[in-house]
Image (cartoon, rainbow, N blue to C red; front, top):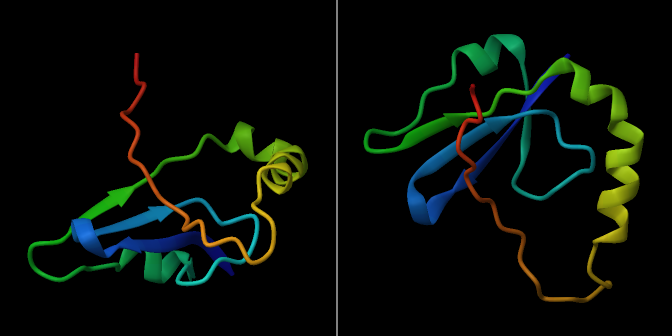
Length: 90
């Protein structure tokens, strides 16, 4: 059973392991816990592991609804991007 989604930012030599994607995306890979724990990347690459509060996952339907509102029209050439956010630990 998949527990995380893996994406890559090739230009920054970064692998991002985060929560399961709510919609299928090209070049994203859903991983089970075994493969999530065993993930390795090439020398010189960085792994960013995004933590998700389980309480946030209860709003998955509303998140998906919001994401559908912000999608670009079919045929649009806008490329998806990732950005890193700092930890907000108190």
